[in-house]
Image 1: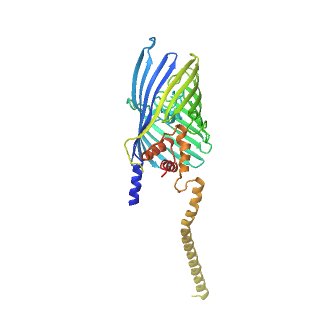
Image 2 (image 1 turned 120 degrees about the horizontal axis):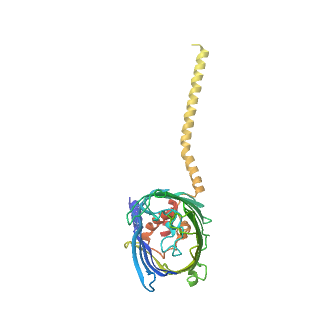
Image 3 (image 1 turned 180 degrees about the horizontal axis):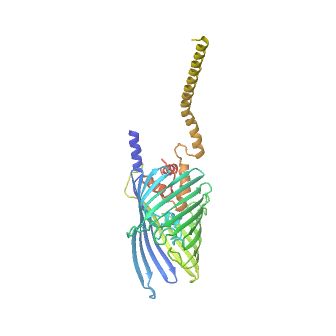
Length: 333
Length: 112
């Protein structure tokens, strides 16, 4: 009994809720002028008991952009909303149940790379809206987990159903879909497939595939994703390298992070229901980030976008900070 | 009663009894062997899948961290141990970690 009490105390001692997230100040310069985007994305993770976790992420964004035709005059708008609010239950070793408002599991960007403190480039991919059902979140239920795992591979799955919600904070479309990924651990190669079906309006199907390769003991990452909708399709390929092997411990040269990304979209017809560019588009992004101490990052990038409506340059800079703190002071064991 | 007929009847009873005893003994033997077979075959299967019940080591946790968490994001500068369970549970959901990888990650976050 004393042992079980000690175990319970140990478990509780590790389960203090966490407030994490990122804040940033981003700028975007194109032919229309410079837009400033102060942004905060706080995240709360609060365990309940030994098998439940409540998670939520919010976005607070102020957009300050130049007024058209009025040099040096700016307009501003403010947005605040919950990105997701979900309850997670560990049902069995291979089964987790999620209910509430959750990020739609399609491709890799929406669930893995969208937070401001993670994505190495400011802008999401051009195809980010394919499969994310317009809002990126679903309101309903989801099952997910590890179907099989060994030292050599891991097979994961996710399947969801979302109902339509017109609530301003929990906006979603009626849809269902899922994802499965096979990850070869020694080779650090992941191949995944995604599927989604919109169950209202045009009843579109979305298909996705992603391949990630991150060689072991290097700071190189190659990520790619392809998505196809009923009216458009596209892909992106991103190479990212962190110069951690340059210089000795503590050297300033270790903190650079060059990024190169190429993406392309095609329209299959003239129905514009998916958020992709209205004409076939190619875009090259070249970024250079510098990772400062204390999870602070300076981001810079130059993008050149090519399309029949006109080519354009996009310059982006930003400063992001990632924070992580206990919700209250606890005792370390 | 004919003596040869009585002898045959005794033989039938004898063989029948021996057969019943053999069946009973064999079933007892099989039942007795079952736990032994399980106890010998299970570790072999576990060794093949790598799902042994031995507690995960720090190296296992570091591997899980490298294979899952740091693929997407840079590691945080550090965090107090009393939030390690919350972070590990969050990563279990986000990265669909197996039960064993979750344990290993928790061990990695709590080295003491």
